[in-house]
Every structure is written in structure tokens, then in C-alpha cells.
Image 1 (cartoon, rainbow, N blue to C red):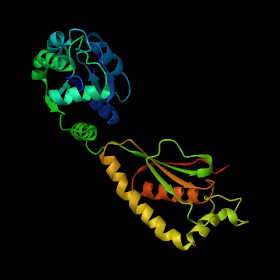
Image 2: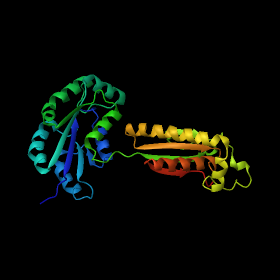
Image 3: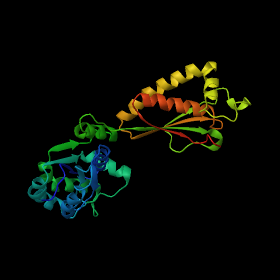
Image 4: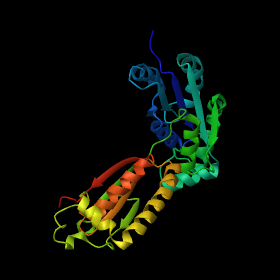
Length: 289
């Protein structure tokens, strides 16, 4: 007897209603996902992935991009999928005509059912054709009033396993401004106002990872208050980013050369945030320059 996944979520609905965001959220929650899979390939796909380790929870996006989807899917779902998988949930996403039309205007992508029709007519045609599919759904989500983040948060709340949550990796990069800014920072802090150990001859060859630099900086009158405020600020912001379903948060700490001040502060900040339970990566980009 062929092994089947224990749990299957099929995501469908109106074009532009947010199906790709639901898929990516399920993937973040540990689902094995696939987008735009032809209906005739769903069963072979389930056979293959069911043999993969940790692939018991599957998410599939299927919609009108598949030929004759509205006519084929209802029977296929009732007579094949519901009998093959013990726990299957069908999610149908929709939104108002006005919101869908605006989303297509913003993305400038063609509606899959347009074929020469105005977007408004294509939306209505798709809505009419999918009435039977919608009637089969276990969960209908109207995303008209959802932001992307609110949609992802709602899906995560419904489908995450007990005791789990979408994790956020916090990357802290120390760097030297003289060597340019790191790419794609979310937060940037300039610590060049602190006295520079570079100008102390005995400290110049050392780095912010050495105890001598740590002691020197901690003795500076500005350091203690600044670091306390920095930690409080980042500790306040990080949960806000996590609530927005952000998977990665990148923080840059910069000084002139990226060897002393930024290194010490980035290292300490990373260790303190790790103590708060965050997944942390610390990168000292310029420490050996």
C-alpha cells in the first residue's frame, strides 16, 4: 500500500487573492509546498514526497492556471484527494472586485483569464466559474482587508503546530564605513562617536573581540548609557518585526574601520539577543582588514 502524507492543504481561489503568500507561510511552518501543480500530477507528487523525511505536511497551490480547472477540480477533489489523504483541507481565497483590480494594476501582471477581456470582466468570469470549487472549501478567506503581514499571521495562527512559531533569524554585521555599507540592512547604527581604540598604539593591532578593547570601551563614559539604550531599542523592535512575519532581520553596526568599536558592540548585542531566545548570526565583515 502506497504511503500518503498525513496532512494536506490545497490552496486555491481567485487570482490575485494572496495564494502565493499563503504558500510561503506554510513553507515557513515546515510544510513541503508546490505551486501551480497540474491536477494529473498531484497524486504522483504525493507518492514521491511522502517518502521524504519530514514531509508529512504538504501544501499545494492549484488554480485556474491549470487547463479547465473549474470543471475538473471538484470531481477530482471529492473522488480522489479526499479518499487518498486522511486529513485534507481546502482553502479558498477571495477578495472584492475592487481590491483584485487594484492589485493587478499595481503589479501590472495580466489576469490569467483575461484573454483580451478587461480585468474587471476577467475577475467576474473567474469568480463565476469557481463557485463550485468555493463551495467545497473548508476555509474561505476574504483577503480584501488583509495586509500581506496580516494574511501570513492569520495563516500561521491556524496551521502552526502547537508549541512552534515562525522563526526569525537576526543577523548582526559589524563593518567599517570606509569599506561601504553592507547590503540590505534593516537597521543601521553608527558608533563612530565613541573614542577610537585605533589611536591607542597598544590597542591598534587588537580587535573588538579582545578583552583589552572590551575593557577600554566599557571605561568610556558614553558607552554604558548608549549600549543600554541600544539594547532596549532593539529588544523593543525585534518582536515587532517578528509579528510582521519577517523571517530575517539584519542589523548593521558601523565604525570607521570595522575592527574595534563596531565589533565589540555587535558581538555583545548578538550575545544579549541570543539570551532573549532569538536565532542569531554575527558577522564581523571587516575585522581582519
